[in-house]
Each structure stands twice: as structure tokens, then as C-alpha cells.
Image (cartoon, rainbow, N blue to C red; front, side, top):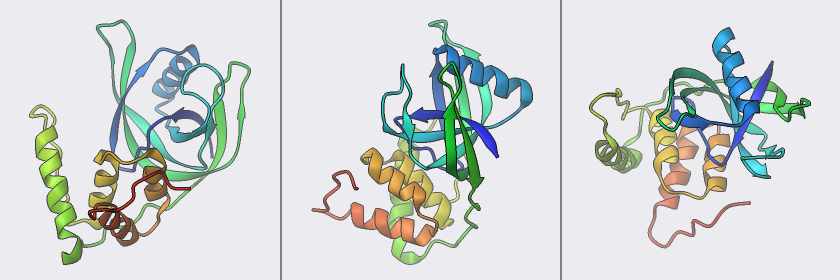
Length: 196
């Protein structure tokens, strides 16, 4: 599968929403093309380089997204909201003449739902408290606090963790292993400096 890439200094998980301001011509073109074809694109954490300007080198594992809303913002820029659908692994990538990246990717299977064990119930309780603080009454979101994969992905998105740790969490296939790592990260005295 060949997709356009949007390297960012953020990590998005399947099932997550992300609001983006679009102002660079290459990404305006990406958004226009994806909207017209109802096609997805890929978001991947930047491994090296910058979001704006030149080429950024993406991490190998990212998330396929679809545009679910867009608007012309008060500042005149284009605003879009994307929904994370499925993780992918980059096989190869190249830049077009206008420095938009395109990647050949292999889609990674979505992790099936798994019942949250009692050991990780405190993580679901923490997530529920965070979501209540962030709640927007205009956009209610169903909660899946008994689903280990959902709880792990939402916590990994919302917690103020270093980006490399979020990337490590994205790359984990097993939802219980992701929760175990989050549980460890949240223990008092745990070192949360960037990994790898």
C-alpha cells in the first residue's frame, strides 16, 4: 500500500483523534487529495528533522488516519481532525519534487479487544479521571474502560510522556504488555527519560 506521509512531533494511536493546522503547501495538497478521494494518509513520529520546512525522517511504525472533519479557521488556516485507524510499518519511502513523502507500507493487524484485568483497573480509573477533566459536552465519546487495548492507547496518548516512550508504546503489539509498561512508568521513582 502506498500512502502520503505526514511526519509530526506527536504519536497517534488507532482510535485516537488529532486536530491539525495545515499551512504548508505540500500538506495542503495532501489534504486536498485525500479529501477528494476519501483516502487515508499516514502519521509517523519524526525520528530526525523538523515538522516545518525540509524533509523529516519518520519512525518506521506509524498510524493510518482518515480526515473526519475540516474547517477554515479564524486565522485563515485550514484545520482538520483525523481519526487513527490502523498501525503500519514503513517498507520504503521517498519524497516527491515538492518534498511530500510517500511510503510503501505494510498494515499491521489491529489488536483485538481484550478484557482489562483487575491488576490494571487503576489505569482505567486514572484514564476516566483524565477524560472527565478534558470532557467536551459537544463531542461525547463512548468509553471502553474494560477494553485493555483502548485503555492503553488512550492513556499513552494523554499522559505527558516523552515522545520516544509514546512511540515505544505504539510499537507494542500486545495490549497487556502496553499496560504493563504504562503501569511501570507510573510507579513513583520510575525514570521516564526518553528510551532508546
